[in-house]
Length: 486
Image (cartoon, rainbow, N blue to C red; front, side):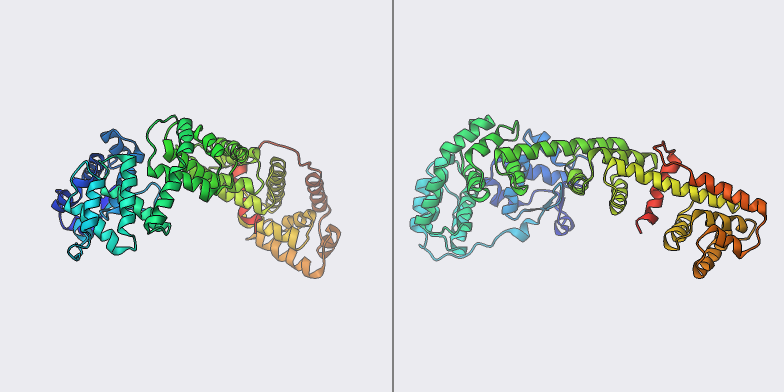
């Protein structure tokens, strides 16, 4: 699936060049890398080939994939793109015309003082008309006080310097708005409180192996980890040391994962990581057993492996099932899952119970083959045969020797299995449950009786021992599961 695409209106309008509205209203205030991501992605959106990918943008621009997505989140905030919730995500370019906000008429002189103070705070460059309008629109559409927005701007300049753009300032302001802080006092309290995290963040940065300046996003993340999630500084630092690459974004991803799994302490996290490592190794073994390969195992572990382990299946049993599936022609994880589900319904979750279960089903198939042979049929066992056999033995309670006796009588008839079924149904109605009772129903030659008794003895004396199965037998046994589970 293409990484970048366009909404229908943009494609239909025939845009093959950059919309002037983007150049005039958005590019002047956007960092070069964000503009480059937007323009290159717009070009790639015309392609349906392998080059239309997140990795392509990152490679061509010499930045990380996280930086590419950060740029797109910036354009999404401005309404120029839409990022889907799919995995991996898709970026849909939107029509600039449809998302350019009309400038709201502001009463003359309303923000004169605000404008002068904002320019004084950001003294390293001249503020544009468009930037002022963005501030005005924010103030007009919210209950945020102008003085509070100035405090946010001062805070951002102290963090980033005079080259700070208005998008960053408004992002910080919106974060405060989301927390319910709209007055100067409330905003200053929040920002001052966050600055207290700087000493802790220096330790986190040391664990990550980075020495860059702390910014507002770092403080927001640390507040989330400690206040919302409940991680201690020691835990955050310990997890930070696990992040060889990826920086704060990787650390945030790990802490979010641990939080969702309920692992909040270093001990719980280490235990979770060990179990996760085991599950991933098990996933690789199962994939290898059925002859498939996946570069990423996250979805496989979540969808299959974790569920199987929670049901009580041990590693050896799951690998054995996978190997049996491969030999039976089942070579997808969905196919293995189907077999695992059927075995679970029959209470088979260990290697010992699996071997016993397969032996029991194999013994039933051998009994059915003996019945078919007695009836003069030379063919393999079918699911219909297994269903009939289960009815005769489990539902009607007929001994094998009685079934074999009737099977010999059916030899030469047009439909032997139907004949056997009719006779056994009649026996069930009459209460016939032994070979002697069955023999008394009809006149039987002595040699036939002897032959029947001899076969019954042979089958009755067979021991169920551990054995090797042929691929054909395994296929038949796994097919039999469809009937056994019902």
